[in-house]
Image (cartoon, rainbow, N blue to C red; front, side, top):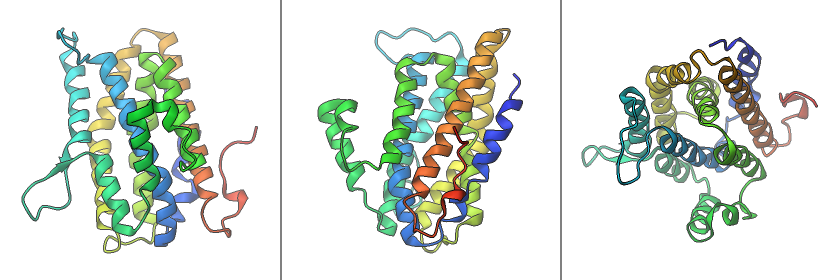
Length: 264
């Protein structure tokens, strides 16, 4: 599978100015209050992939590929029930999303918008929840891209967004935050744990496995390969636009020319 055309968007994403702009607790709060929605919708993308490749309904039927089942279920297990940082009472488990909420509370970031979103989601479904004015516009746009794909995308397109638009780029992004941000581990230990844990899992395990899954899906299918590449580019561009819009909520000295989305 030829992924050369991803070099430019991946480079622009990796070098996005937002990663070096998270230097105060106030900036971290702005970042987290927007990013938490991307942390949440990641799970919906993963669950869609699980539904397509490893059906979980009853009565059960074999999926036909034990390697795929193992890969998807392993990621679901680690995303929904990974070890937490706090081990004062022994090993505890929590979803990465809930660990992120804990990290937000640790630094004083508001979880009100997400709490309200989840409450309305349970009562009115996604369409009702997405109308909430409390959701940051950047997050609402990004989630719109994700759920458009979940509702209309082919399985290999969902896999492309998951593998390349999430698993493969997360280590690039989170490493930049860890390297360039002036927020220390002492200031935000749970946030640092979340970044480091995701970087380790995605870089060494989930990312390579996800790319192998894509290879299997497009083997000897040039049309499918092209659709995978196009969806991967679209997902990376959506992330770049997301960071551009989040950056607009940072202090006013951040200039418009720092935005990196292509014109047009």
